Length: 163
Image (tube, rainbow, N blue to C red; front, top):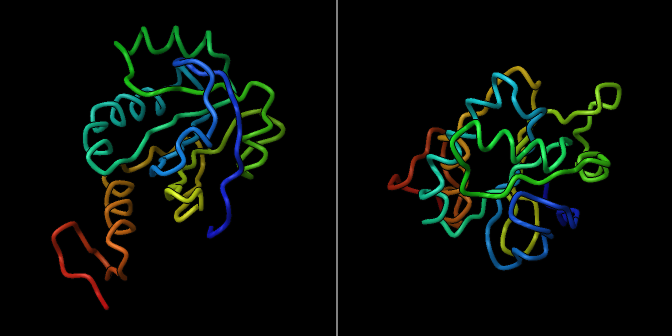
């Protein structure tokens, strides 16, 4: 939190991607444990369905795990398509840099990072792989961060902010 997000260059389902490619934009970088798993198979489609809401907030979605690009592409096909890149951290370096690698299993914890246009991590949430994320909450926090103000408990877009 509050530190420069570690940069990377990884292969993805949309070609090679670096975090620095997104300088000047908000980035929602989310890690997930495995392709073809039950919880992830609910999350990725939900992020995809909500992608237009992230687009309106000038935010790019990047999904990442330690599976290969070939696995990602096969999984995307089984899901019916995904409109944002899934990155392969096959060597586990990026997952390790972000502090969320489960070393003995070789997979990522379920984590999301909101990175501001200056490349600083403004938000992170990390939890066990068996619990799916709440995309509404990630959108709510992204909206709150973009107000530039303090936001009270339960704040939603359109509510009053604090000075």
